Amino acid sequence: MSSANSLFETNDLVLTKKILSVREHYDMEDRTGTKLGEADGNLFQLPAKFVVIDASGSERMHLEGKVLSFRNQFTFYDDARAELGTIKKKIVKLIGEEYWVERDGVEYMRIYGNFTEHDYQMEVNGVQVASIHKKWVSVRDQFGISITGEVDHRFVIGAMIVIEHTEVTERQSHQ
Image 1 (cartoon, rainbow, N blue to C red):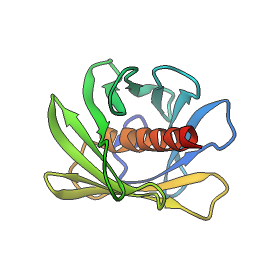
Image 2 (image 1 turned 180 degrees about the vertical axis):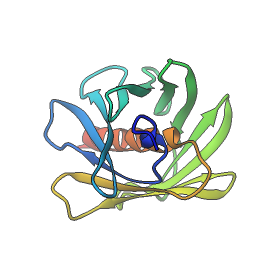
Image 3 (image 1 turned 60 degrees about the vertical axis):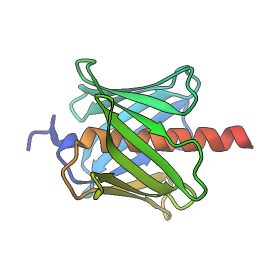
């Protein structure tokens, strides 16, 4: 496995968020602690944007929020700035949170979860392909990501960054 591609080939990773930082920063490692990449975004930027880079420092993906939207929406771009897809949040859900990812305007993946418990399940065609769980005993916010099915890893990693950003931003605006 080449180090440049291992970020999107590893099925078990840990996403760690810096708590005190001038910008939103996430480190991505495999379960042994080997750094696979990182994502950076500015705290006060409209629209919100994130850049995902691999361990060699090459940009692998770009996430960009939509400024004027009825619902939270981010678009995923590959390293050549070609659009991969869009993640959107369901506006009204009585229990938990729900997102979906569209690729070429067609639903590709559903994400079900509970932000207060930090558990998310990702499904493609009704089959679970990934799960995310927050590690409660850690100095920094850590999320374990397990990819168990056939899915584009970029959507799983990008979705987790977007969900964490969206939920934290919404929680702060309600306080």
